[in-house]
Image 1: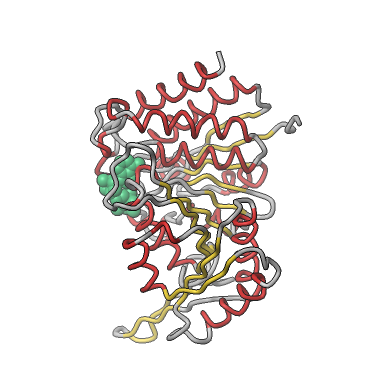
Image 2: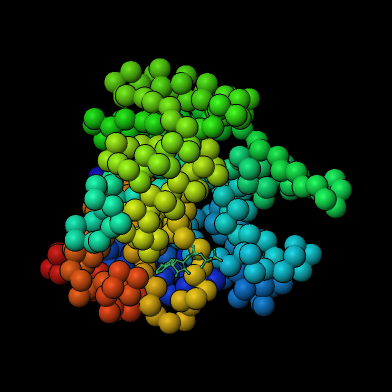
Length: 356
Ligand code: ATP
C-alpha cells in the first residue's frame, strides 16, 4: 500500500551532530530514491549555530516546523555547555519532547553478528522509557523547573509520576511486545522505597498487563535489573520503566550490545515522532569525521518504519548489519578505519546495490 507524502525535518545539533546527521540524511535519501518514497527532507539549525544566528538554541520557527513535519531527525546537542536561559540556552531535546508530546522513548539494544561485546550472552531487548516526567526537571512541571533550592545548602527535586503517563507507556510496551511473539514484559521500578510514586507506576502497568494475558509479565527492582542485564541480558525482551531508570539502563544495555555508537532510539507520541541517537554530542570527536553514525542512521530507520516506510527501514537495517559484520567496514569506535562519511556512502551504496 502506498504511504502518502511525508516530510522529515533534520536538526543537526552540536558536536558530532552535523556529521552524523549528514550521514543519516544521505542514507535516508538513498533509501527514498530506491524505494520510490514520497518523502521530503529539509534541515534547520538548533544548538550553538542557532544561538549565534537567532539568539536562542531553539528558535520558535524550528518548533513550528517540527510540529508541521511528520517526523524529526534530531542530532545530539551540547546542552550542558549552553549559556543560561536568559542568554538563549534551552535544551532543544527536552522542549521538543514536550511540544510534540513524545511520551515514549523506544530504545532497542541488540548484538550484531561479528561485533565484539563485553558479555558472553547475546542481547536483544527494547527499553520503553517514559519520556515526559519522572525526575526530569526540564519537562516535568507545567511552569518552572522541577528542581529548586530553598536554602543555599539544600536542593530539592520533584519526581512526577501520573496515571496517564504510566498507563500510556505501559500500553506502548505491551503493544510492542504483542508484535513479537513469545516476548515478555518486565516493569523496572524501585517501589520498595519509592512506595507512592513507583507504587502508582506499577499499579497502572499491572492494569494494562491484565489486558494482555498472552504476554508474560514480571516486575524487577532497578538495582537487580542492572545486575541481571550484565549477567544474562537474554532474559529480557521488553522493559517498561520510568524516565531516569530507562535513561540509565539503556546506556548500560547499549554498551553491552557493542557501544553507544550503535545505540538508536525513537521518541514517539500520538501525532509525532523523532529519531534521536541515545548518546550525547561527543565533543571529543566533533569535526574529526570519526563518529559512528549507526546510532542516528538506525534511529532514522525506526522513524521510517513508524511512518510506514517498512521496506526502506529494513533495507537500512540490513545494510548496516552487513557493514558492521565486516571489521574492514567499521568506524574507529569498533576498531575499524572508516570515517563517518565513508561509512554513510557505503551504506547508501549497499542499499542501491541491493535493489539494482
Ligand atoms: P554530551 O556532553 O553531549 O552528553 P558526552 O561526550 O559527554 O556528550 P556522549 O556523547 O553520550 O557524552 O558520549 C560519551 C563518549 O562515547 C563520547 O565521548 C565518545 O567518545 C563516545 N561516543 C558517543 N557517541 C559516539 C558515536 N556515535 N561514535 C563513536 N563514539 C561515540
